[in-house]
Length: 174
Image (cartoon, rainbow, N blue to C red; front, top):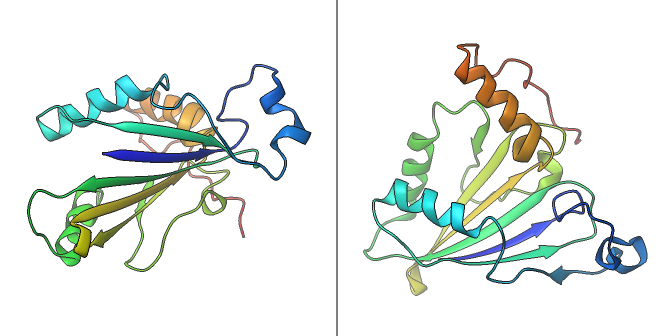
């Protein structure tokens, strides 16, 4: 599996550095921690737990000239033939009970602008049938869904509160 991630400055670290200086970031895109990102191990571990077997994962994050938001495009080679409708139905079924995950209809793809300011995660799936590849795209606001929102969501679950308590914010856009 290959994951290509794009993150704004609030997701790419907060230590002052030349890479985070506005003239360096503006109108630029730069990969960082290629194949050695700090979240690689936990991602592989979580995917193995869900899939029931280990997998190989290459993760390449990129700093992009935005403040908030993360979008990841993930590529996986399929082991068997499956239709786009089956994949879409699987995603819709899997996330049906998740209040903060929006599985977008076929033909629509997510972007950070649509989730910034919220605890939402927008996802879409596309079947690249000729190459037997599944393309999965997800987008979050890294400050809410990525950090603070996840903490509040977990506290709600741990203490028996409604999962959505304090998190039912609408995105800033439009």
